[in-house]
Structure formats: C-alpha cells, structure tokens
Image (tube, rainbow over all chains, first blue to last red; front, side, top):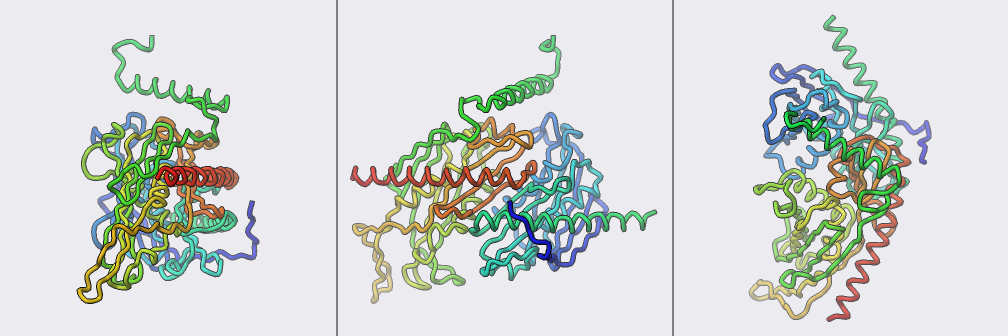
Length: 220
Length: 287
C-alpha cells in the first residue's frame, strides 16, 4: 500500500459555501472552489411517478445543467456518478415510494467540476435535512506531464495534465465511493492519488463542519 | 400462512427479493455463484471477428449470454479547425428494447449514454488509435470512424463486452487508400488497396460488483448487477497501465480491495489479448 509522506502538503483552492439560499427547494447550497461554482437544489421526499416508483426506497433523480446549452452525454455520465454516490450515502429506505430530485446548475467551470458538483450535492442534501449514513466529498487530482500530483486543479492545469482522476470519499472511513478517471496512469500513481485525496478530504470535511457551525451559530 | 391471497403485491415482492438475497448470500458462503462460477471467474468469452461483411470492421462478442456486436464505418470528412491534423472516432452504444425488458423504445436512456461516454473516454485515455493516423491531408481531409456498438442480449457486464467488441472490430478494420487529386481537389478512393488500422494499445476491461461492502465478484450477470451495492470497471492495457478506473458511486471500497481488482484486470487483459490475436490469425488463414 502506498503511503504519502507527511511533508507532501495538499493544496486546495479557496472554498466557499452558502446554504439555504433558494426559497423554493427543500434544501439548497452553492459551492465554490476557486473560480468553479455550482448551485444545488433538492426537492423531496415528494410524490413519485408510478413508472419510477421503487417499492422499498425513494427514487433519486439527479439533473446536471451546464452553464450554456442543453445537457448532453457528458452530463448524463456526471449525473450517474453523482446519483449513485448520493444513493449510497442517503438512507433511501426511510422514504419508500417517494421521489427525491437533486438539481445541479453549473455556474462556472474552472476545473475540478465533478468534485465541486459532489460537494454542492452533499451540502444541499444536508440542508434538506435528509438522513444520511455518511457524508461524502469530491476531490480531483491531476498528474502533470512531469509526474507531479496536483490536487484541485484549475481548467488550465487539467488541460495540460497527463491523467485526471476524481474521487468521492466518504466521511466514515475515508474510503473511495466514486472514481472517474481520464488518461492513463500506473497502479502506484492511482494509489498515491487516492491517499492524497483521502488527506484532502479531511480538509473538506473540516470545512463542511465549520460552515455548518457558522450557519447555526448565526441563527441561534 | 405468509402466502395468503389478501397480502398487498409489494409484500410479495419484498419476500421474494429477500429470498433471492438470502440465496445469493448462501451461494457466496461457499465461494460459488448461482451459475456455478467462482467469485473471480469470468463467463466463457466467445469472439467472432468480421461478422458484418458490409462494415469496414466488425466483431461479435459473447460473455455468457451477454451478446454485443460492433461495426466500424469509416467516412471521409473535414478535420475540425482546432485539430487540423487529426481525424476522429465517434463511438455509440445502443441498448435497444430487443436486448432486455428494462429498456424502452425511444431516445437512449441514461445507461446507454453513460456507456457511450465511458467508451469514448477509454478510447481517448488509452491512445488505442492515434487520431493523427486518421488524417489524410492536413486541414482538408480525414477519416471519421463511427463505432456502432449494439447490445443484442443483455445479461450484465456490457462494458467489458463493449470494449472487447470495439477492440476486435478496430483490429479488423481495413481502410481503403485515398489520394487527393491535385487538379480537381477531389478525393479518389481506391477500394482495392486496403490497409489495416494501427492499434497502439490494447485496453481490456474487467468489471466487478460489490455485495454487502465486502464480497467482490467479477463479471456480474444482470441479476447479480441489480442486487449489488456498487459496480467497478477497471481498464488496463498490455503494459499494465490503467486506462480507466470507473466506479460510479455505490458503497465505498478500500485501497486493498481495489488492488485485488486491478490484479484480476491485468490477468484478464492478457487472456483477452491472446484471444483476439488467436481469432484474428484464424480469420487470416481462412482468407
């Protein structure tokens, strides 16, 4: 198993998050990572269409809307990744025969879009007050042509990179829930990236905690 | 009696699905699956290359009951302005209602679109074909390879079968020679002289399913897929490099388990590479 030396510092861009910023959805959040920004809204549990009804759990639908144009094949594959990650962390069996809808609107893509979508999704689900077995966060790693690993890359760094990997990490045991990769890489590089992402995820979960704490300390 | 007639339908469904789950669990205790395979055993892979005579390249793959056919159609086109020295490859995965009752007629569903995107990502990541090879004249003429992949029988693990079908079909593809006439500036195609495509890498996938966060099985059937809690597809090439580690959500997986999957995927790559070469040789000797 690969171990990352403690000297290897994980640098992430500036984070920002705002919850309950929309009035109509049951839960909403916007998540900002550097210049990348995604807005998320959750509706549910609500009535479900008979054709989509699942008898023992809620049906989760994820919709990803790009900044310009209509959603295409790439968005479908992102939707699948986000949906299955949320399905694994949400306790869907608490709401049988009902529907949950998660809408992700991309406001700006400046790299690490999928991880930003995952983070926004998690914050919105939290805001909606849905029961979850664990939280999750998204981390993107790029491997540059020199073999250097960059966490949370910008769009320019993504373009120059030899390989790009996005992981969703759970908060309970920091294991990999979702993995989506581009480019070719060695097994060692993969394990290294996973280890770095697990380290980075701690920072993100700390940020989740801080932002929720800040929000509730304001309300009280 | 539980099976009295006045119980609502969904209770019956819950009972039957619980029985199925229990059944699978008992099988896995014995390290054996309902169809008699071991946990890390693939179904029999059958490959037929050059099945469609009207296509430029084709292959039919069977993984147990799962049947995938892939046809390659080459067309001449203008290169895009941002990549004037490159041709392009357009993969498309079709899951028609014919292959399973879970697919409805109409526009492609999420699974078909996600599979198409996955295949496109594998082609791009693995450098299977250098798109520069498809360029005929810089900025003016290039080849477009339409890779149509169709599922004829859906019994789980279509991604692995799709990659094998695509790779075998591309290895079978022969492009006619094209020369651009200097005076008329029109392309002249010589169908008599055909050349094989250069395949630089041989990516092969291996798909896994996770049960109860701990049990891993390889090459799931449709039934196993619908009962599992997570899917994972690992694509490796002949140098042991990873081209894709695709896990669209589901229950978390530890690094050790992932390593197990990668090791199995590398072994699978060798098996399939050998199989494709063997079938190609037999096709050549038949000609």
